[in-house]
Image 1: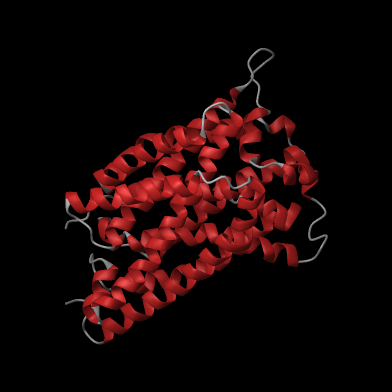
Image 2: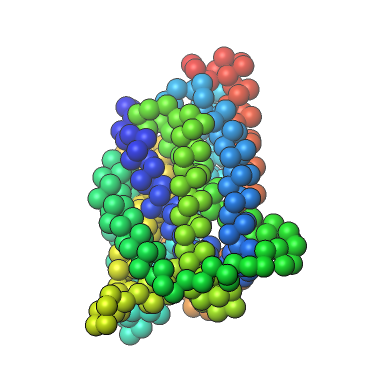
Length: 361
């Protein structure tokens, strides 16, 4: 299989996919953990991530454009490759489920409370399934179309709300020491950990991934996190921002143009849906990819199964407070440490396979 997308396209995909995580999903959790020092958690997490991506780069530096799980299966035993692919698939499935649940809950609560959540889930997941079925090229093409407008809208809301910002609200620094900062690092790190998706799909990218490639992604994601985070603190204050379920969305509600144009928060629907659409499509595609499901029938069955299960889980009658507790106490920390462990194990196995001369066979 020839590589299908460029590095620039892969950056666009991750900016939408992981950008939604860092820009929207983790912000309320991060503010609750680190308060006004949450932006410092982003800096510390980014610095730690720059060390972590050395591991990812080492793992794929000399294996060419072969799928990493194929290499592990052939160098050791198919069961080893399947177990690691299964661990990756569970992680990707969790991404799909969390994203779907947060998206349908948000649109139901803010714009259409009379429409059942199930309707949103069925429609949104269906278009994501179609995009995943069409493959990485389709995901890259849709990202290339959606991202420029998302970026323009982001800069638009950032600069337009300047009059509402009070940067003195970022002080005093470290009022409660470094402990809140380190608590926040866990949640920001869970967002940065999604860069492992680039590791999973490296064989679909035409150019070789260098350390600089991974570093560019980390720095872009750090910027995507800092923008709405500092915006929420400086516009609402830490007390009020910490009470908001979706601070990035609330920033749109402040926006007005002149005296007569307001209620521009509908633009946030485009931003959120673009990120969620690509995020779910990519995760579903990678689930197919790590298991090397390439036949049309096999892809249809697997995607149909994912469609049904994710719809069921994401529409379960769980209160938002309970969902936030589960995400804060379990899902985000486990995903961070799980990805770190998986990356170390995968890289160790790939390096050992290289030494044994089996990675290039």
